[in-house]
Image 1: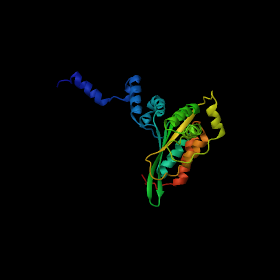
Image 2: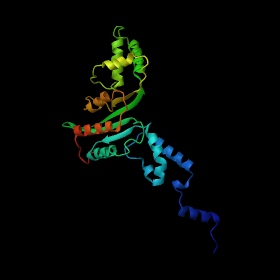
Image 3: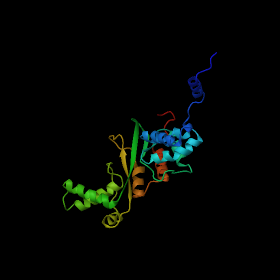
Image 4: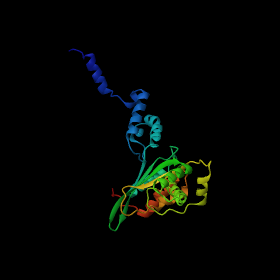
Length: 250
C-alpha cells in the first residue's frame, strides 16, 4: 500500500487544523477588524459580535470598535419593554462612555394611539460650531433671501439661536433669545465651541409626536456635549410617555 503524497498529507492536516483568526499575523487581523467595523452604517448598544469571539480578540478589537463608533450613528431602539430594559441596563454600566464623544444618536420608538400604532425615529446629529460662525451664515442667508435691511440683525440673531439649539429641522416653538446668547454673538473674541444636536424626525408625518424631552434637553444643554445621563433622561421620558409596549411587539 503506497503512502499518501505530501500534498494529500497537507490537505489532511489543513482539514484537521482549520485556520483561525488568531492564526494569522496581527497586522492582518487589524485589517479585518477595520474592514468589518467600517463596513457597517450604524452601531447598536451591544458590542459587535466580532468582539465577543474570544477574550484575546475582544482585547485586540474593542478599542478599534469604539473608535469606529465616532463616525457611525448609535441606534437606540425602544419599541418594547425588553428594549427599554436593555437600554437602561447599558446606560447603567460602570464603563458608561468608552468613547470620549457621543456620536450621532438615533432613537426609535412606537407610539400606540387609539387610531393605530406608529413607529417614530428621532435623529440627533452632532455638529461642532461657534455662535459667531453661525451668525455670519445667518446674516448671509437673510441678505440672500431678501429680508428687509432693518430686520436683518434681529432675524439673524433669532435664526442663529434656532440653529444652535438644533431646531432648524423642526417646526416647533423656540424660546426667546436670552441676553447672554446675544452678548456672545457680539463678543469678537468669543470662540467657545458650541455643540449642536440637530434634531430631525424620520419619516416626517402630519403630526409631530411628543418630543418635548428632546427639545427640553437641547435648551438645557445650551451648547454643551451630551452625556450618558442625558441619554438616560430621554429613555426614561420616552418610557413614561409611550408606556411599556407588549413584549411581542416588533
